[in-house]
Amino acid sequence: MRKKISDKIACANELLKKKSVSKEELSDLKRWLGYFQHERLIHLIVTVFTGLCEMISIIVLLLSTNYAAVALTALIGILFIFYIIHYYILENGVQKLYGLIDALGEKIM
Image 1 (cartoon, rainbow, N blue to C red):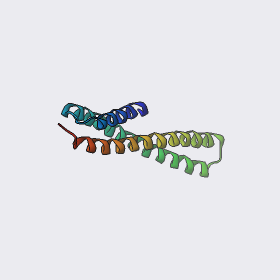
Image 2: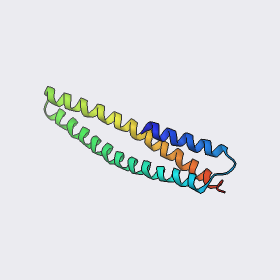
Image 3: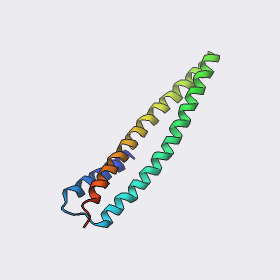
Image 4: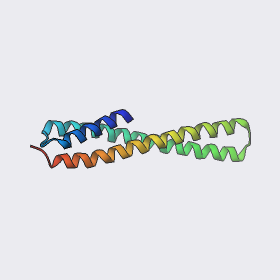
């Protein structure tokens, strides 16, 4: 996903360097923005669910101190950190695309 969003940002930056932009090029970027928005929503839901699971596992760890609870808390914590990083990249990419699409909208032929 990181590569796809980076490619679309690079494509939008290349289009900004041109004198004018066609409606088809802008429409294609808006279509991809819709895909990224959907992906962002799904990952937000999964990230929140993973955070809730992490909180539950911490509570279980506090109530019973066995090695399985420690392992579960550590595994879910690592997964949660990676989901936060992925969501951060996705969110910032979508925000960049918003700005680039707005700038490209002013250059339509």
